[in-house]
Image 1 (cartoon, one colour):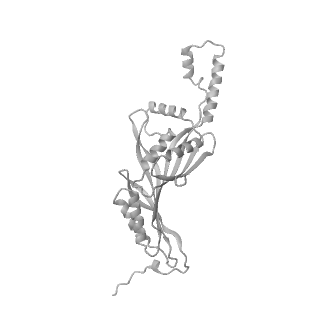
Image 2 (tube, rainbow, N blue to C red):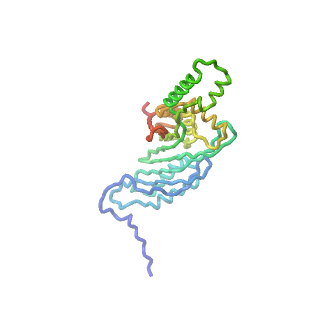
Image 3 (cartoon, one colour):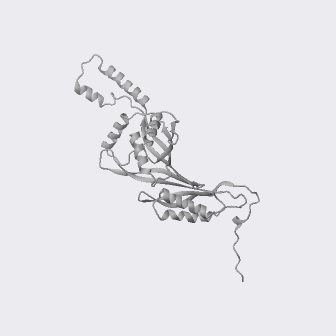
Length: 298
C-alpha cells in the first residue's frame, strides 16, 4: 500500500489574490525568563503575507520558533532572533514579522519604614517588529500609585481652620488642649480624598539596546510619582504612606508631567506615550491625562 502525501492546503494558490498586512496567532501560552524569574506569558506572533497569490502562511513554523523563548533570558537580541526565524521560515511569502508578549513582572518591594517586603505585580507588554531589516522594540508597563487631590486637600484644611475658630475663638490657648483637639475627630473634621491610580507607559527603545530596561523605567516612574502603592505594611508604614500622600498632592496633569520628565532621563528610550488614570473617589468617572515625547524630533 503506497503512503499518501499529506495535503498542504496552505500551499495552494489563493482564489482572491491579495496581500495581507498581518497573519498569525494570538494568546499562545509561553514561558519567559525575565529578571531571573520564569514567568507565564502569552504571545501574539505573526508575519505579513506579501505574496498575494499564496493561500496562507505556515503558522506551525511560528509556533515552533517561539520555543527559543525557553532557551535564554528575554532580551532584544533574543526577540530579533525569533523574528528572523519567522521570516526565514516564510522566505518568499513575508517581509515583516512581529511578536508581542504579555506577562506580569513580579518585583519584591520594601515597606517604607519597617523591615517588611512583599511582591508587587506590574502588567507588561513587549512588542518587537522586524520589517525590511529594520528592528525595534516597544514596552508597555502599568504602574499603580496613590494620588491625593490638591483641591480636596485645600477644602479640608479650610474646614479644619473654621472648626478651630469655632472651638477656640476668644479663648486662651493651652498646649495640651490644642494637642488633644488636633488628635480628635472633632478637630480634624475633614480629610482630602485619595484614589488608586494607574500610569500606563508605552516606550520605544533605541535600536541597539542590549537589555530590556524594565526595572529602571519602573524605578524612575515610582520615584517621580512619590506614592507607589505598598505591599506588606505595619502601622508605621501606613503612617509614612499617609504622610507621603499629604506632602505629595497631585492632579492627573501633575502626574503626567512628572512622568514625562522622568522618562526622558532613561537613556535607552527614544520616544514614549504616558497615560495616567485617577479613579476618582469623588466622582463616578475617571480623571485622565496623556503626554507624548519623541526624542528623535526634539
